[in-house]
Length: 89
Image (cartoon, rainbow, N blue to C red; front, side, top):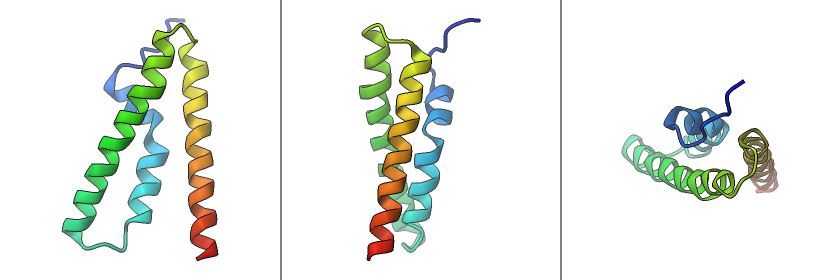
């Protein structure tokens, strides 16, 4: 089985999908233009984090599947923390 190429845009998009969905829901109270600008900023920030964490970690020699699992776990922690903060407010 060939190794996963984490540098591909479609891999980054699929691997980051939970963050995209949660971000869209969290900012759903904004107006259309504000929502679009905020979501675009979030997508750029997520892409930068993906490049910094996933691509650079794989470049250092770690297995791509393990690093993608770490990325998924980090997303789930962020989502859980976001939900907890919202419920406390």
